[in-house]
Amino acid sequence: MKYAAVGGTTTIVTEAMEIYPVAGLAGIMDFLASLRDQPIKFFATAPAMVSTSRAASGISADDLERLLSLEEIVGLGESYWQGVLQNPEAYLPQFEKTLAHGKRLEGHSAGARGTRLQAYAACGISSCHEPIKVDEVLERLRLGIYVMVREGSIRRDLEQIAAIKDMAVDTRRLILTTDGVSPADLMEKGYMEFLVQKAIDCGFNPVTAIQMATLNVAEHFGLDDRIGGIAPGKYADLVLIPDTRTIRATCVISNGRVIAREGRLIASPRKHAFAPASLDSIRLPGPITPAHFALPCNGDGDEATVRVIEMVTDLVTRETSLTLPIKRGEILADVDNDLIKIAAIDRTRFPGKCFTGLIKGFGLRSGAMASSAAWDTSCIVVVGVEENDMALCVNRIRELQGGTVVCAGGRVIEELSMPIFGYISPLPLEELAGKTTAIRQAAAGLGVAFSDPLLTLVTLTGAAIPYLRICEEGLVNLKSGLTMGLFSL
Image (cartoon, rainbow, N blue to C red; front, side, top):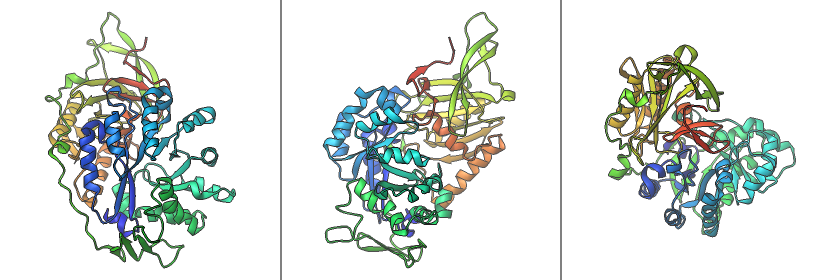
């Protein structure tokens, strides 16, 4: 909050989707309580929960009704288009309830074009943050969808999309978003002021760029009756910027109170004491053993054909079939061919339920890496060459009650504790930035060449990025929506 506020941000809209599968409604209420009465304002979206795990999919009607009744809930969080179109009977009732409350339906339409995008838009979807090219932006704008242009630590799309400024297009449905910013980027580059400045540097008119981070956002979320303007009856939010082409706040006023001046925070954030249940989301019934990660193969043959997750980029995967030798009744990792084991272990809903598979192209040459911050599920996700190190990683996460751990040679070489829901660390941002850098360096030392190995790891359970993923139930093909086992028929 400190780094966001000093740059001029007075309001943030966030999500609560990761909390729901591990902590339910009580967890979301605790999370929202932590955001109240702070120097800046927070709003959130309720979780739609399109998940690779059927056990974690969806939100109960009663829980959604309770959340939508809250003033700080502005809509239903992003619902991935494949899941919605594959299972409309599960998600359309959520959409109808949200719209009946006069709130927004946030979208995620990566890869949807033509009739598929139109079908998704017809569900009432109000926004999408996935366009990476100008033609994708135009297609969504023409359907009345707000386009959130990403410029953050996961993707940087603003420079390519900026060509739209020369096309005589109405920009009032363009919004700037980070879609996630790392601690190091937040400290080095700043928050929304960095995005506005880059938009100006890319050729947007300064007033247009500022609207894309303020008024357009407020109108989209139906908050313009309170924020996004300076008038009687609205929050007194002001940011003093001497030069509109240089976005540097000299004074930040939130709710009529000066909270930052000349890059220094004056109003300190309020600390929140999370409920004991929010600090107890790793509920494995006992220690994990190397045997959890065995891949036994029954039968008399000396080889078997298996499904494998293959990394195409640092985030995108595909399904590959490999015929592998059976040794001592098992399928083994083959580090020489960049083929290692991957497992997803439910930590909350069905604690200990585990599925182990194989992944190619992750780059790990020894050791293991695990995290409880797996996307869209209640899983711990772990990759590794040695089963002993995989078990050590998961058991250390159990001791920490959440976190990311890198192990090699039977010892922990780096770790980051995240005990709040298994997703959030209480460390100061400066220490958190150092820890995430150390995790990246530790993974690189074991052979992983991806720029952000932790992001690569935790997205392997996600239902948003194509196209073969993993959860505690098996391998999930996002194109078909099918959950499959290891062995190909």
